[in-house]
Image (tube, rainbow, N blue to C red; front, side, top):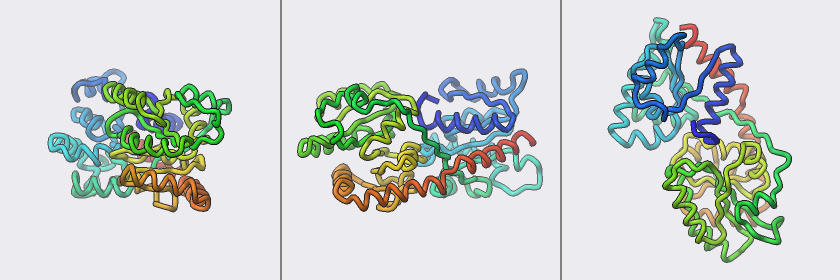
Length: 351
């Protein structure tokens, strides 16, 4: 629930769906609670809560182990891609899913519809089946809904200047915008060294990192590295409208994450008709089809190669921009997402 993070944006969006259906919805950060007992106490207070919805089966789902109300789960991405590799965490997630066992097994009882799980992609659903559960008849696949809105008053030159970029040729710069919260799983330093070397060969190529400072230790490390590295800059985090405006003005949006459930920034870039260069990991490959809706890379050196292709091949650039926009419009509809969550939450409410 850290402000300006993907999970926070997703939670706010789902809350708007729930409340537009006539319910009251309260957002809570899993970090506020030390144990499942604290959440159980919160849920049982007067007036009692009627249901719960957890984003991330380990970080949030484990806190539902003692609740006595129906609940839903949303696989966040790192729970399936990373946490399952830790046996202690995997066991906890199994316990959460066992508590919601009726969602996995056909049943004629009303309780069978009182719990559900949602995965953003077919791949995440398959991984959940493989690592955590034997049956998945009640794991629903619902891609994230995407909507972009651009701030009209963002001054591009001021944005770059405030990020430390000094150039008399602002309109000629090729700004690669790495949109990510500063935390280890986003691997914000992955491209820095190689990109800096590329920048030294062509000073118009610039990498700007932008996102909330979530991990203070990593943030300090990123700040120190950027300070001594040419061609790479760290921008102050911005509002969603300003971020979308910056994305709209950049040459390409970059993703360098070690793991993703479904990157909202990648999809937002597609919606804004901006090319995407994404690290070739399962979460990104689920939405970025190489040379169709964007470009994938598996090393910093390959990133530079693909970036150079975007610079020199205008036909390729136009193709991925056009296809990316069409893809988001077809597969990431807010209307479909709203209808799915309203329907699923109604199963909790009517149980």
